[in-house]
Every structure is written in C-alpha cells, then in structure tokens.
Amino acid sequence: MILVLAEQQGGTLNRASWETVAAAQQAGGPVKVAVLGAGAEVPAAELAGADVAEVLLVQAPPIESYTLDGYVAAMVQLVAAEHPDNVFLPHTYQARDYAPALAVRLGLAHVTDCVGTKRTDTGLLFVRPVFQGRLLADVAPAGPALVTFQIGAVRADSVTRGAAPAPIRTVAATVDAAAIRQKPEAPFREAKQAVDLTEAERIVAVGRGIKAQEKIALAQQLAAALGAEVGASRPICDAGWLPMDRQIGSSGQTVAPKLYVALGVSGAIQHLVGMKGSRTIVAINKDPEAPIFEIADYGVVGDLFEIVPALIKELQG
Ligand SMILES: Cc1cc2nc3c(=O)[nH]c(=O)nc-3n(C[C@H](O)[C@H](O)[C@H](O)COP(=O)(O)OP(=O)(O)OC[C@H]3O[C@@H](n4cnc5c(N)ncnc54)[C@H](O)[C@@H]3O)c2cc1C
Image (tube, rainbow, N blue to C red):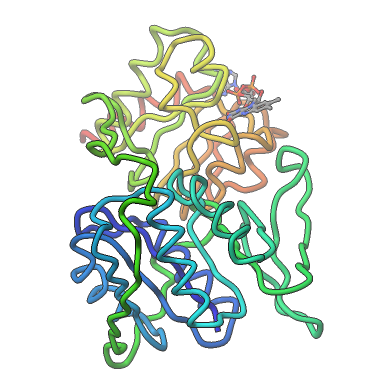
C-alpha cells in the first residue's frame, strides 16, 4: 500500500497533492491518502472522490497550522500504524521542511524530487533527475521509502476517480504541544504582484530571443490576449528584465499549464525540467535546431518579432 500525505491550508488542497495521488495510482497497488490540520474535513471529502482505498483524516488537537515538530510527531504515529510499503509526498517547501526528519524518525529511505516510478520484477523504482537534469536515475531503495514527487512531474488531472466515494476514517494522533519547538506564524504571502506560476493554466515564456527589456511588452501583450501569465528563462530574470518569481526551470518554478508558449527560448535542459509537464507546448524560435522543438507540440521556425504581432492581431480579431 502507498500512503500519500496530502497538503492543505485552511481547507484547500494544493494541486501538488493531487499530482502525488496520481503518482501513487500510477505506481500500482492500493493507495491511501492522509490529510491533517485545521479544516482538513473538506479536503478529506474531496480526496474521497479519487479511486483510493481510504482517506485518513488525521486529528491531532494542538495542530492547527503546520509546524515541523507537530507534523513529524503526528505522521510518525500514522505511518507506524498503517505500515505502508512507501509514503509519497509532494516536493513542496513544506514537505522539504519535514520529510527528511520524518524519514529519519521512521528509519525509511528518503528519495526526493522524483518524476515517476517504474514497476519491475524486483519492486518499485523511483525515477529522479541527477546532474542538473541531464540524466534520469532509477533509484531502488533497500526497503520502504519516503518519496517526494517533483511538482508538475505527474498531471493532477490524471487522478483516477472512484466509482463511489472512498471511506473516510478519522485517526487520532497524540501530539505534545509543549514538545513543538516552532511557533507558526501567519502563512507566507507573496507580494501582491507576485504570481504563482505553478497554478497558471496558460504561460507565455520569454527567452533571450526577446533581445531587449522593452520588447518584453510584446510578450505581455500576447499573454494578455491569451489570458496567460508571463514566465521567463533564467537569463531574462538574471538580467532583471522580469522578477525572479517569473523564472521557470531547475532553479525557478516547475510549471504544468495547459498551454506553454515559448518565445525565443532555446530549450536548455535546466529550462525544460521546469516546463516539460505542460500539456501543449508551442515554440517560436528562429533556429530550427533549437532543442525546444524536441518537446514542442507545435513549432514555428521564424522571427518572433514577426510572428507574435500577427498572433496578437489574430487573437484580438
Ligand atoms: C545550475 C544552473 C541552473 C540553471 N537554471 C535555469 C532555470 O531555472 N531556468 C532557465 O531557463 N535556465 C536555467 N539555467 C540556464 C540554462 O542553462 C540556459 O542558459 C538558459 O535556459 C537559456 O535561456 P534562453 O533559452 O532564454 O537563451 P538562449 O539559450 O540564448 O536562447 C535564445 C533563443 O532565442 C532564439 N532567438 C533569437 N532571436 C530570435 C528571434 N528574433 N525570434 C525567435 N527566436 C529567436 C535563438 O535561436 C535561441 O534558441 C541554469 C543553468 C545552470 C548552470
């Protein structure tokens, strides 16, 4: 059995949790999903719609908000009681905070940032990028493992729905409030103009082919016409042409929109690992050999300064 530890805040599940449920379903075998924290009843009911054996609603009274000590204490009891073959988590900031401590406390192998699984005669292998995404390694832990999945590696909408709602079981965990060393503060909020590209349905990504900061307005016009967010390759953010939170790739955000339009982006591996989960990739690049075309669904070989204005005109039609 695979136990997924879903993540919610104030009654809202994040998309990465659905992606992890999908990863668990694709790995094969029974799946259970646990959810913890104040307001977890609503996400538990949502999760019960997935084709899973059971949803575990973990109740640990001192835990209202996330703290490392609180979550580790509750999850240690949960995992010890459920005996899963493996525990899956989304590779979020929260999981990165507590998953290593949880793995140590449970004596489990810890495999991070996975992009998929492979079922073999010898068991389940976990696929994860190594060497800045240049290679994919198949990791075979010696025993049960705590595994985190890269955001966007598996599509959230590939979750299989159940024929009937899965049962929800309430599980009580005892957590000593005095043993929690961290004091939760109000959840981190991005500055008002900051954007969570991981939730965007459409993205127009700008690469160095845009040539100059003032030309970014062209990409913004296309984004406005498409109802899309603007993202960028690293050199654009390094140059300060767009803020760092717009960067997509191994050192930026990992995104999986329905539509990804790349303008003058070459498709370096560090960029590709951050967007290859996009459903439809459109690349506009004047170099027919640009690596972005290897993963593009639609490729336009040409000058973006001719093609983008024509596209905007057509869209505004
Ligand atoms: C440790 C490390 C981490 C990194 N992390 C990231 C990351 O998170 N995200 C990231 O993006 N990169 C990252 N990089 C950088 C990455 O290796 C590439 O250098 C970068 O992605 C290239 O950006 P680009 O495609 O915009 O530019 P370029 O590679 O310079 O490509 C520009 C493209 O524009 C095309 N072009 C030029 N003019 C036009 C035109 N008029 N019309 C159409 N096309 C045109 C060119 O043919 C070319 O393909 C990282 C690198 C390292 C070493």
